[in-house]
Image (cartoon, rainbow, N blue to C red):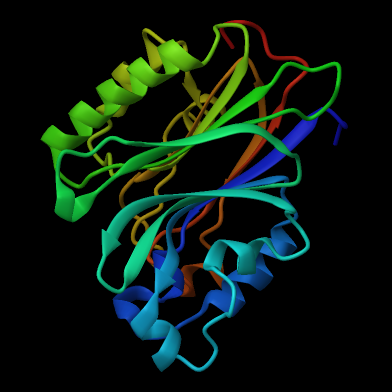
Length: 257
C-alpha cells in the first residue's frame, strides 16, 4: 500500500443495535472498526444522545457514540444531527485520522419526522496535497424525497467543492432502484467504487442476506484501488446493513477520474 492511499469504511450502525433492536452491540462494533484499520469512517444512524436508553442499558457508554467509537484511533471527528426528538437525537458522523479544516451539516429534508442531512467535512492529508472533501449522507426511504435530496446534494457539491479538488461521498442512499447514478455521474463526474471495480453496486441490505444495493461510495479526482463488502461474520450480526470498504489513491486521480 502506498503512503498516498486512503482507506475508508462506510457503515449504517443502526444506533448500535442488532436488527429489531434485540441486542446492544456498540462495543462489538467498536472492536470491528478498530480491526478494519481504516483512515476515515463514515457512519450513519449514530446516536448522539438518548436519555432513556442511557439509563436503561447497563453498558451504554458515558461518552457520545461517535466519541466512543473514535476512541484513540480517530482523534478527529464531526457529527451532524439528522433526527431530533424528546429523548435525544441521531445522525451522521465522520471519524478521521486527519484533522478537519472545515465542516458543516446541511438539512436536506422537508419531512420533520424523518429529518435527513449532508455532513460535509474537509481534511488535508499532507502539506503538498489538495484538500479532500468528505460527505456522509443518509437519504430518505421515499423516492420523491430522495430525488429532491439528490438535487440538493448536487447543488451543494457544485457550489462548495471546486472541480479540481477530491471528493468522497459515502453512506446509505436507500437507492435500491439505482436512480442516484444519473444525478451524481453525469454532471458532477462522480464514479462509484464498486461499479467501477466490480461492474455493479454492492448489495448491503439486509446484512445477513444482502439483496439490495443501499450503500455507496462515490468519488472524484481519486483513483479507486480496491473495495470490499464486509458481509462475513461478525459484521452481519451487528447491524441491518453490511459495511463497505474502499482504498483510494489521492495522488494519481485525474480531474475526471
